[in-house]
Image (cartoon, rainbow, N blue to C red; front, side):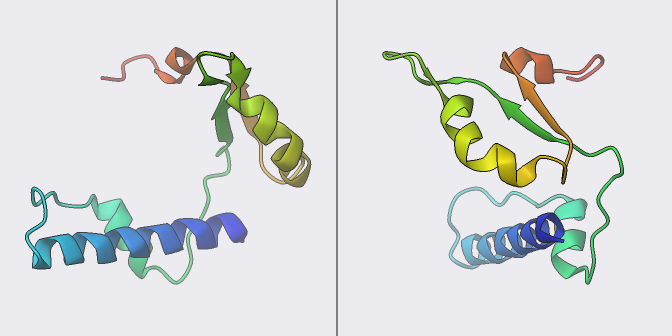
Length: 101
């Protein structure tokens, strides 16, 4: 329920920001995707049954080699474990799926 609400609220914000930018002629006029607009108007959003949260364990600061996921994990993993499938990737290139462009 919280994930659904978060996505809907984000979609509403994106639609509002796009309208504000268009109204004030800020930046290029880029059209939002139809799924974002539909999500902003939906009463309820369905989450795909195989959806998962993907975290990429990237270096937070290259100089000190502290990892972003390590600090995030301590405060968030316990809250999410068992509620949503999670995948932690060591390298961002693992997010590129076969056939993706």
